[in-house]
Image (cartoon, one colour):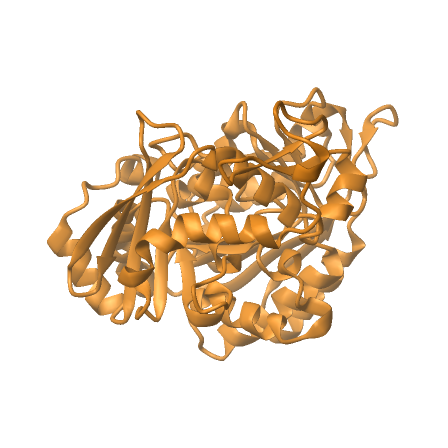
Length: 426
């Protein structure tokens, strides 16, 4: 698969427009590119289904640090207070309107510049990203977003529109690493549809009991650990069991009785590679991984899904490099761990780590998360998502629908609960 798809074809405007008219008849595509010369500037290319293309420059001083603040606080229930207690950092507003999170008071600011609620920051981000293009996307029923650089870590669904609603309340939203990849994905789907495939393979709650006792314990409430310039390396971490993910998988089994489920010691890299070697793995239409994960921005190809330790540490990590070597023909892979989409994209590239590795292996679409989510919440989200897919709703639309349903339920309405689930693909 790697050789076939390692160089997606150059985007042809007529071809892209034709595909949009076929698959997004009432939609728009928004592609963000970082301006290489201006650190806080992006170019937004908006393409409507009729082929009309509009280019807008998005320029705000210190936008990047505001984006970082928004991402970090959103992951803490959107609560600035909780964020401050956990990180010892404070949210500050500068005279130019931008925001910053810092453990110490930035120069030229006073305590009056502290911000204790996220609403003003959220409005700033929403106005910065949606304001310049809103007139071009207001009538679209769906958005396909291709984010570059830091924007790959933003849940656009949570942004507020000029109408005062969350963007997801007005439009279905999906993502793509690039429009050329989106085109390639549509082209190879036709051949996949001709295959007789197995229903679903799920790996959940791997056995982590065979670890060294001197390894550093990972927070049991976070099924995903993210490495961002920290000193903790992958092999120093101790992975706690995830019994909630087995419950999640069994709920999915009630929807797909014919699924193949591997848990405990059987949820191993060795078994998965063996299935790949025999040609069985590529027979599955859908893949579901409910495991720990490890992300390394310094070396994205070492980002890994953490599987069973039954055959030792070296065989526990299914890295992006390993995934490249798989032969997949899956319509959908769900990474039901946290932060699986959150490798920081390099400017001008837009894709690194696990999501792109899956595409290169032959997977069509991927549902993944931008930050940590409670396993009980994840189980509820996944159950509803698969119910809709089983009913015939397209996965991209199903993901958007679950978000809208969660917003209306008090216990699931928090943006930190539903916003991190992002869908890349068709």
